Length: 572
Ligand SMILES: Cc1cc2nc3c(=O)[nH]c(=O)nc-3n(C[C@H](O)[C@H](O)[C@H](O)COP(=O)(O)OP(=O)(O)OC[C@H]3O[C@@H](n4cnc5c(N)ncnc54)[C@H](O)[C@@H]3O)c2cc1C
Image (cartoon, rainbow, N blue to C red; front, side):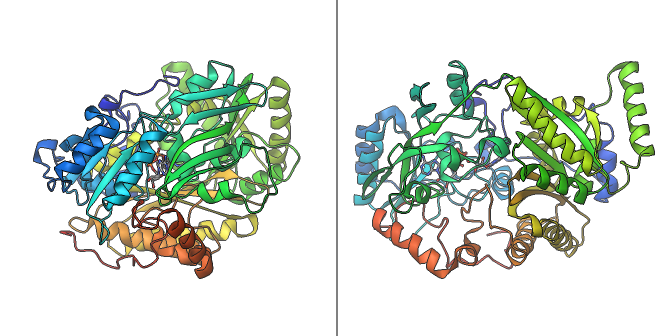
């Protein structure tokens, strides 16, 4: 599939992606044996998932008068107190979210889900919400992995309205002269790319959640796409935006740059629904690349690979992507590679592995890099020239474009594996951060140790592996995945312990609290450490101005008083 928009009603409420799709493991015979051995798994059990019928939600607290007024604003069919709608808007897609969906234990469903069709609807809905003490949760694709869309209760607010923005999905304008495009925020990745590609353009923003996340969610959580090394993060792509707050609207000026004081736009990007609803944005677009080339390179050590990325990024020309797996992730990538098809492929694969082994690239320290370049033919050649030379200087061995093509074809597939693992009682989650080059290796080591210690402290064997995911002239982002058998009856506590250990380690070792997932409720307890007390006070003053009654997404981003629980009782 290219940019096909998934049918929303065929999306899994209990997992990731489409109901009709599952991660294929039948052609990856090494996977389960490897996992059994590494995680010391004895039996793989598959507990039954809750069905929708079995799930009980508390009754909606919204009174009939307010319901009627909401219907008057957006129309009867765009207001819902249906169980399915409330359920599918009660959490995002984090590990704990999926765990609670599978168990059917939903703590905070919204009282009502509303689907506005225009900015005018949003203005009227916020005015009604403020007057009636209803909290508002802006909802894009709902793919937040930091608890960003969970409706948390706040004292003094009577009920919760989740505002699903996906009806607002129009491209408003494409300016081929200035290379900008304006769009409403509910447009999904595939809808936006299809519209732009049709006119010969691209935004170039491809987070792994691309197929199911939307423009407003990307902006509100400062998202990063897989090609951010070339195209930048979403905050680099937004030329201007409009935010509707309970106190009124803020529209930033569509200009390429400005010295009119601090940049207001950047204070609104990343506001995670706590200041208001972003309704539209003008984006910087690019011409569609003429060609692309993705290929693999092997390094003898992680350090060699990091040096190659640093040297490339500090040169004059950067490629689209340099994604470097650490040794453990490299091993997992090998284990997850499909069986060769036919005799010839099988012989070529064996020969390739034999050569790599002989040359010392398959030692326990060996690391895989995927190098991607796209643009005009000349620019792809030039990007490759700089990057491949830096890689070779650091001892890399090119393994061709096969592995690059596989990565490209499967880049949106891996999240489906999470559902398979969860079905087998295996904890699997990811986290990310960024730091400067001088601290990157120490940070990588410290996070890995902290996760592995936290896993083993609960008596199970686990694995933490990572890749350098997004690179800059002065540093890079590092993205961790961790897996472990679930500790039966203490699954939530197990995750909390790992999350706390890893985040404390990030903060101690010079990493940022988040490079692209955002803060939500899960990272909020550390926001003061990240921004400093004055920084938090400043942002709170902004919130007070735009959202004086505190109705916008309570409990997220700036909630400094929430303590990360040391211990959680599973029945909570
Ligand atoms: C499998 C998987 C892969 C992922 N890969 C990536 C990745 O590669 N890169 C990356 O950056 N992230 C990734 N994420 C995280 C997530 O997809 C991003 O944070 C994404 O930007 C969220 O977009 P969304 O539309 O789903 O937003 P939602 O989850 O709906 O919302 C996210 C936050 O933004 C707020 N919000 C949403 N819309 C608006 C609006 N219009 N106005 C104001 N506030 C709003 C919400 O209230 C919430 O706080 C991944 C998540 C999953 C599950």
